[in-house]
Length: 114
Length: 114
Image (cartoon, rainbow over all chains, first blue to last red; front, side):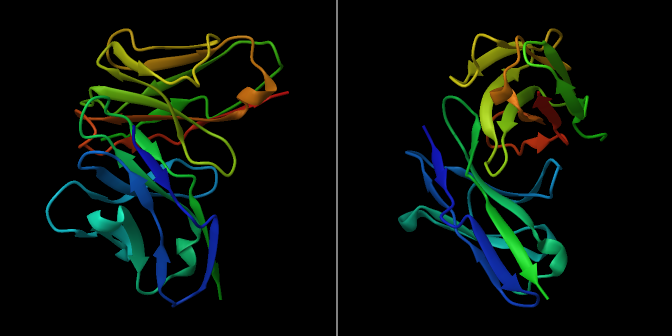
């Protein structure tokens, strides 16, 4: 079974600064990897996904993530954070075989200070 | 594409009462998922359907929980004899095919058991 770890419960960055949110996964086969964002009281919106091919994937809102198989990581980055990026971010891993459920990490809350 | 819709968005119920949530997936999506999310946590997988067949149930889904998708379209999640620990947001999601396809979430149904 797959699992996801997001080591940082919350992160605070200044507006305009760069951002990196960490994600480590565990899965025996090639994973499907996702980053979702959730605003308070809302559902989850997909930012980007990795299935295969180029290990650097681009998403919406200026986000990107890099898949590093050797480190079992899929970190999310943004070069310049905007105040509207304040939200909860979830990394998720989907199984490529057997049961096809997607498992989520506990999330990282992003705070943006002016 | 009208997105995944859930009803009701909020429900307050007394302990011991039964509640039912409805989910209407995106029309061409054959997979439907239910997740539960508590404050400060990521979504936890509960169950999923492929068409009308319920293919997997989490251990989190006790005997008091039942989910159906009778015609392979909308789904219901019923909780019988609610307990305070059932208070959470119940998220529905849908996708085309398996885990390689993105799952799209609804806005969620908040349950408060008093």
